[in-house]
Image 1 (cartoon, helix red, strand yellow):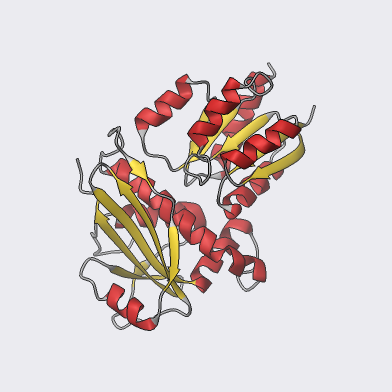
Image 2: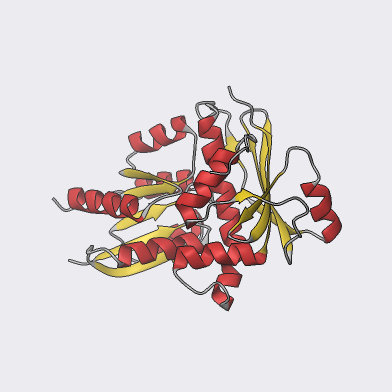
Length: 154
Length: 128
């Protein structure tokens, strides 16, 4: 668990990453460089108020997760091909964990969307990581960013 | 008798993980089948005899809740054990599924032990 980070939802994100793929992110150094081919993964929910989990990461990070999950080399085409799928699954798992942790899981109106994934250009990455509630992390040498929108505790 | 197990999840990586976990256990397996959503799963079940379904809930086309309802409704599939493997947080939905005849639930992110223990328990009960 990263020190000195208390951002909403981050504990669940870190726990999901550790349990799912044995990766422990730490706070990134200031001015960390954007990853190659970044994507923004988002999953939305209504509980019943709007909430979302957003993860920005490069394809190499997704490939690292896939390699840990499937016991394959992260540089293989198989790992790279699985990158987006793994990041979307990570968003899905984190969203479920955040909802449970916040005591929102008993609301019958609760609905989770399917995760979406979109490419980001450098300007989009810079704008995302500049947001006050976005946590920029270093996960085994990969720079990633995480944000929770809404999802206040019941 | 070796089992035919159908893994239903829209994440191909998760399907591969579950296949790998089951392959590393001593559970006798004849065939590990895959489907990316509930609709595909029902198509597989229409043409193949399956001993166990491991299914996600949050999927495109047809989610796991509707898929389970249809499995339970059909004479040919209603006795197939279903285990939900999902990040689903909605407790009411999970409780309803269990009362509708789902035999087990494994929460994502899962450990290999959680999958192995649940499959062993459910298949043991089904063939006791």
